Length: 181
Length: 270
Image (tube, rainbow over all chains, first blue to last red):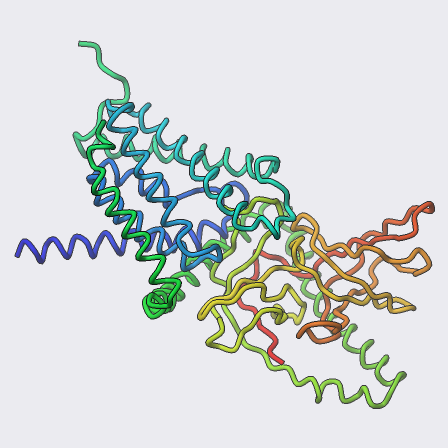
């Protein structure tokens, strides 16, 4: 019975994270202007890191990366590798530096993850497409920075929203402000 | 530190990634990937439709309501008439030139393959305007690189730039990486190459100063090179940039489609 519950839980996780990936690829990408800069997969993975242990989150990152890789036209493995790397580093940060699990910790974590994800994503693509790069190096493209700025802003916004939502439902997290004792 | 305490597990993850990539590149993952893409397509179509609907409404709300209603009708009408006019002009040219060219339609018997737009690549673009769309047809449906893609009015919106088994990427005519052999329907039937400009308009460069081009001249595909037939409307000349001290002039071409309304397109298969 416990095993059935265990598999059922994984099925639900699989469906939820697959849905998030499809929503990102099909829905978010077709939204107008700055709304298309929402990076749902990264937000979902960072939050799952708060609810589950690292290895569970890594499996979820694998699922998410797989969907994004098969539904996009970059080389297979790019998103898988990036998501796993981000989760490894985020987990490392949560264990060693951002240990108090406050809102500030999560804000720093989400914003820095977006930054790292974008830099790594475009760096790998720039190396991979080095022969066909007509656009110039991504760091010198204003559009790249604008997109990243909006991604950071959205991630911070979602963190603020989800953190307070999760805080009201769970005791995993610290309150908004650290209380003096 | 905690990170190093899990060293063995880290290696295990590296092996998992390595195996996954290996399975993909030797084709072992193909059935799973194809199954996943096939399962995702209806959902993606639904979400894309919802998203582009929101985008369209959002863009429409930016304009005044009465103007929007009127211009929307006019845009559709202009696109339809332009296509019709281009067809007539082409037929007229054909009649005037060589009788043999009347065989064009029969010898180039193109058939359409309808496809749903399921995604746009926007979030991960490096350069502004390098927008592509993804359609739910791939090599299994007979799609291959270089085929032209038209909208419901018969206006060419782009061409297939990458193909997978069940999905394809279409680079739009407004994409700076997307080039088309084109002809301006002016007196001299000026030929050149069009390329996208910032995702908004299309440019045609290196036109000799001697060519007389007018605003609103229709630009069509020339049919030279590749699998794209002649006579498909790309857009209309919206601006002519010529300086007396330069050898060449270039023109801006206004596309006759709205990206936010693209949901069903047709791939032209020769």
